[in-house]
Image 1: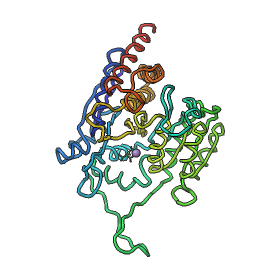
Image 2 (image 1 turned 90 degrees about the vertical axis):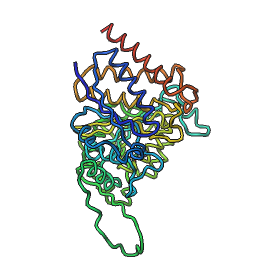
Image 3 (image 1 turned 180 degrees about the vertical axis):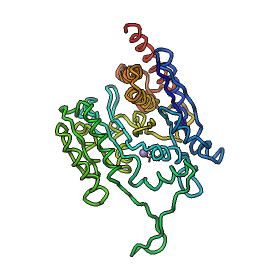
Length: 397
Ligand code: IPM
Ligand code: MN
């Protein structure tokens, strides 16, 4: 019987609330399947920084690195929680882990479930049906516009000073200016693009006609980094003749994403473009309350809902827990993949069905999906479905 070591980082605001629900789900799985979890919670984030003067306790990074099979993160970021140098307080947690653990692929599935209405306003309700939105965005997670900040956070997390950006002079730039380099490497691009093709190999193609396709989204008409990224994409695509190639500039992509989501299967892009595009894409799946993600590296993995700490709703018990429960679902799936624990794969499939059934069979929903239920009512309803499906599975098995 495999024991899975899970480190939880509730973080800020509603991250803490949805983490409580994630724990109910893990408990439900433990009580109804052979799976066992060893859970360690670490307090962290912007609020923790305001309260204690540190982003997380010393040794937390090492704990995540050395003692965890998977990390589950709530949300990082709180109004007014800024470090003396201007960095996001809690950045060491989210960015330090992404970079320090080399979690190079940020995987963000965008799927519209039956029973959920997308969030695009206007007369498009008939045009999009659930079967037309089902893609995975793979966002490069360790370099690009985030590279300096990521490295700073990662160095800080490991107690190593980060060298400052060298002083430079740029003709025509007089007076004060800020400088954000955007390094894109062959190594960083190759590994994330390969990862995207691997995902496409495992999926069943686009919702429109089942074509397997990896779309490379860049701005190679303007930036050198994107030119490198695209040329590596084309090299890797050559080894996957069964997968259709597709390339678009990020500006045009944002339009196509909304106009014809059914065209997309797997999308691969650089860090900041992926950050922006996935917030937009979440509207196609019913909003941020539905958006889950995985940060995957070769040796480590971390899972988190995309929505952030939403200070406006924090403490009210009303936010949608599904993004977090779906992130747990991704965690179970990856634990199954990496540890070979078949029970984790079973649990992942069951959690996905439970969520799907909850929304399509008229189960209670939170305000963002037109319902009136609280965060815990929705998650407890989903947990009840999980419990009964697990019971059925293990008694008939
Ligand atoms: C995300 C978030 C983070 C990011 C922030 C909190 C640093 O927006 O996970 O998308 O920019 O990557
Ligand atoms: Mn974001």
